[in-house]
Amino acid sequence: MMLARTKIATGLAASIAAGALALSAGLVPAQASAPTRAGSAAGSAAAVSEPPVFAATLARSYDTFDANQAVAVDKKYFYVVDNRSITKHDKSTGQPLLQFASNADGPLIHMDSGAVVGDKLYAVHSNYDESPMESSIEVFDTKTMRHIDTYSFGIYRGSLTWLDRHDGAWWAGFANYDQVPDGETEPYGETYNTQVVKMDDKFQVVESWTIPKTILDRFKPMSNSGGSWGPDGRLWLTGHDLGEAYVMNVPSAGSELEWAATVTLPNVEGQGIAWDRSSNRPTLWAIKRSTKQALSFTVPYSSISDPKTVNWQVLGPGHFQQ
Image (tube, rainbow, N blue to C red; front, side, top):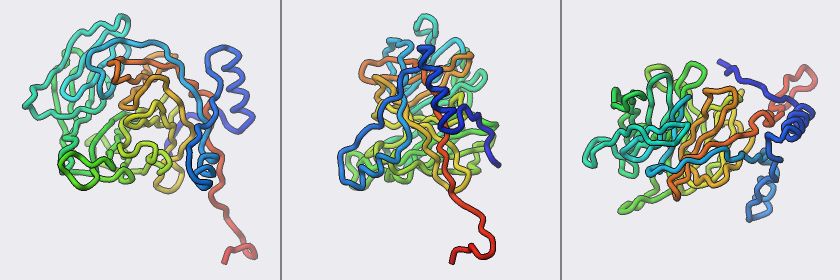
């Protein structure tokens, strides 16, 4: 089924007009130049073909004590995710209110990110960096922060790193890594095996896609750590270390996600992200691990247009390719 997604700007003229309007209002930073990567001539040619780069603007920062893996958000609160704990904060003051904390010898080892859907917080969990990879989804009541449900994948496609709800389905990232864990001799799954999956209400995978290798090369030796569906109807992905979000579309054909743009996130050091879609001015949330901060950004998503490519044609007699 083709996904229904919002087309914010179509064509070069519309893209320029939207960007100019936003700039004149003082709401959107100027488009940055595409990042350059040192390397061979072939690498330079690849960089030229990359999509445009935009810059997000920091809206607010919050000091926390455990912003280590990710942040989730709803209308009134944000939730800082660490390996074995999740802390609920008041969005207006930043004050910590409640915390779920797992025992050090408990079954929860490595929670990676979370997403709020209704009155529940869905946190993804894995046994990273133990082998073989095991993953589960852990569910919490946002009011009480009590653990209320679990869904186990067991040994599956990789290490589950993010989850979100979009278009009547669940979406998730199963990460694999080129990193060699301590005491091991082989990479932890190999980064190129990372997948984005779409699941039904029972968390059964119905489709899956790969991430462009140019993006995965930036993630190496780590992998895809964050994912959240934006107000523009596109999937936003992050890696483990870089302050960049990659704006993706589900392709009309094939198995690789379509890269529409890159958005730089100042002071972000990778990890899980979450779109706050609770107001008419959506913001993108992330963390800065080194300072244990939760950060919210205004993002020029309305200036991003979809790539215009023609991938096929229908030929009549006399024009067949042979």
